[in-house]
Length: 233
Ligand code: 6GU
Image 1 (cartoon, rainbow, N blue to C red):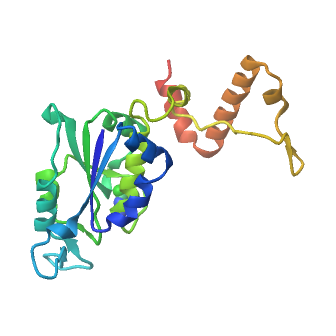
Image 2: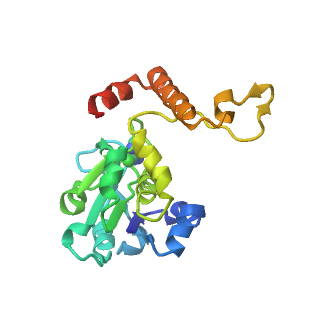
Image 3: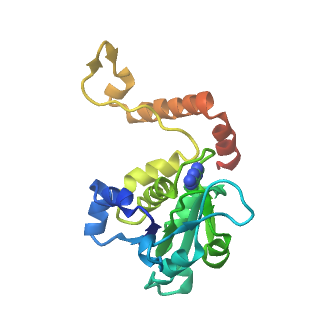
């Protein structure tokens, strides 16, 4: 799977792509990443990428021409035209969830546009964007961090990136929050690891973990519990 990210600050993204699991996935040829600096496609002497909004109002808007030129430079080697999707992360998009991540993980090529300032010229959305996605109900100052959140959630679902068991465990627990994890030592600052985890009784451990998941979900995300009961079996 290939990710192309268009940004005015590609250096923000660089360190992430050079880090642990992602770097390994790239090295193994499972994931390919391309960073495009939008400013390289600005035509004027000052390499202007933003301008004041028509109709007035606060802030600046990312100009259409440099973005369009940057998007036109992106080459896809997809076998079918359905294999490429262009995503614009924005707080006004639809909510990005694990289900959306699963749907995107089967695409061959994802192109992400990182916005800055008040937003991007609407005509770029009209002409190039397949979907607008928000990572949650809060506002970030730019699209880079949202793009990384989306890429991270998607690429780990691509075949071969992480061990299958971890993903199976996740899908079993679909819709519920995780049980608590412990590793050595057995006692830390007076707090002991629950006996059941040291018992070796796999069925009991499984039951204990399922109870903790329900309990935790009930306490902090009752909305998820209702949803998971509605969709289970
Ligand atoms: Cl995708 N972008 C920005 N700038 N802020 C956000 C967001 C995206 N999702 C939630 N807040």
